[in-house]
Image (cartoon, rainbow, N blue to C red; front, side):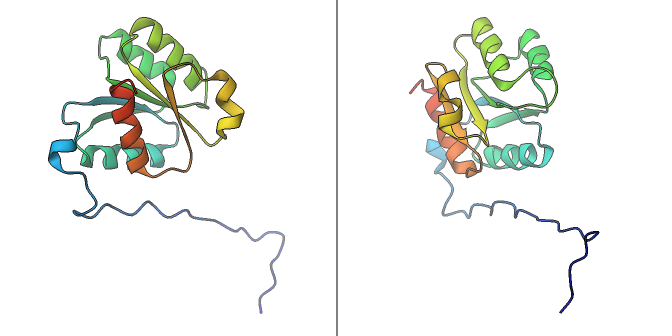
Length: 153
């Protein structure tokens, strides 16, 4: 049996979520065909996976890596139905900051905050009408939260 040395590296790989089968997908009548979502996630792989899975549900997704780029888009008049943002973004503004600015400029925008932190850790900073999803979550849970945020539930 091989002994581990101090210089050995262990790389842990998290499997990608399994794709939905045709049976698991929502019926076309339940899809949100005209839904526009702005997804802010600094983890490029997660952003790509979530964008692809939401697009499969008929949701128009634009993914960005930081809050500053999102503010440029919002300032240019490209207003989504729902803003989905990670709370802890690398760099300047946090997801909380972005949500606050987005809501001030466009109160009609639904907001979903996502984080690896627990609800207990972030509950005191959540605003009324903001949804929260703790990572890891299934893309289907995000799609359901998007529909609820768009419907103002």
